[in-house]
Image (tube, rainbow, N blue to C red):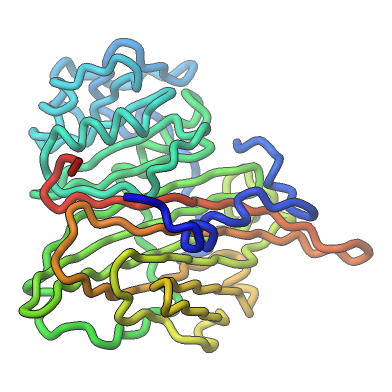
Length: 353
């Protein structure tokens, strides 16, 4: 699918911001509270294939059958695809560890054949853990940015098994939502991007639901961005407060409706810009209270109406997270983290050529 230059610019610009953006050149390392880091023995028993590095001093309970543990771990390079597929088909989550984790995950999900999506096809140099979790006839995918392997592997696995589910601070009803869509619609899965940097932590969550219609199909995208201030994160930098979440998406099909509208609610201000010519929308959420400066969850929902359900269904998107260090005698300092790229969903599994 050819890129759309204006749309690509909308979603990917600012990934290399300069000047006052401390996070741009630094190494990566709903609710305001954050769970403490997990230990590997808190997520066992595990299936651990040869070649998977484990944290120093860890001694998890392991099993010999890929379907017998809570998670099956495989090295990203030269992973045993048949064992990984057996684990998924046996309802066991799988995780790939090391370089090429995201590419290996995509290949295995395609071979599995169930519906799935990946929030960004852009390969991240710091993505060393990627996972899939089977839920009936769909897969949920997890990408981890900035996770140090193997020392932070246990924390990543904990989030695979217990993904964050914070509620949205602002989540109004989507206009034009078809009657009975929740009953007739089909969920294509959930795609997560979990991030950790030297300041704090964030999570992006995309979910897609589709339904054919008599004249046009309906595709509903829900994008969610959770940002935590540094003071709420184990090992974070408490000088940096949550300052903004920006959810940007552009579509190849008609954008019928999107929420939330502009306004202020529940400790957040919302700004929205739409480009009808490019079927694009840009939501910006900023905190207005001490509670939301500690952390908040921003949500955007969009309804797209293609003539028929595309396979694959894709959109260019970016969840942009910003933290601020307020200073008295100098300009405030900002830290940015972005998740740009084209999200792709496969209603019938596999990959369309």
